[in-house]
Length: 224
Ligand code: ADP
Image (tube, rainbow, N blue to C red; front, side):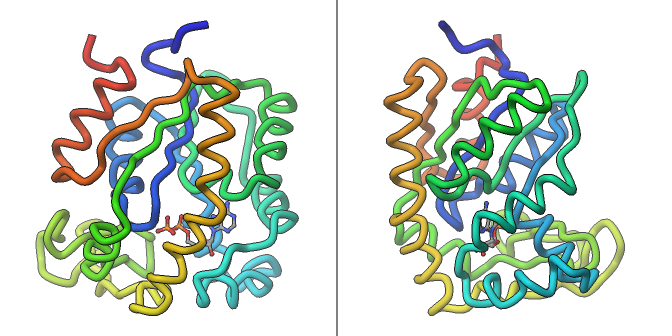
């Protein structure tokens, strides 16, 4: 089986600070993917102070993973059958326990992941990038002081809200999140590489973001 190009449904992996979310946003805008971002869904639940938000808040503040059953609950609430839409998963699956959850959703909602894309970045580069990250507390758009600055300093382009640093972007939490990635994501990548090497793509994320984007498009067959 060869990779359908461009893939209709895909998952992007990358350590915190890999630029995976900016890449997902760009691919989403240009190729019409619906972004399924568990991190953003969780932050939205926290902003709303709903029942799920109250139970996940302390996990996010510590940089710790949210337990799998709560992620299942979150996706049950948010994930709809794609119909003719393309889905791009950013931040899920994040543990080996979530791998069968994704399979369950694929079966129930009748779609199939056609590509697993890894943005490979070194630990050091990722940590350096994360210190410049800013986020809009109202709409969740992510900026970067150097790589993706807002038009007006410290202000959201979309709604004019003053940008903030995410509470989980402090030095200790950043290091902890890198360790979580090494412990949990690496086995998932190995799993997909072995299970379906034909659907697996790896891009060098240590390059400037524009070069990563170009390489990712090529890897996904979007240029032909
Ligand atoms: P990053 O990729 O920069 O770590 P995300 O926005 O993807 O940021 O995730 C932020 C936080 O949300 C994570 O540190 C974790 O606490 C929680 N989270 C997001 N997705 C998942 C998931 N699939 N399983 C468990 N926790 C998650």
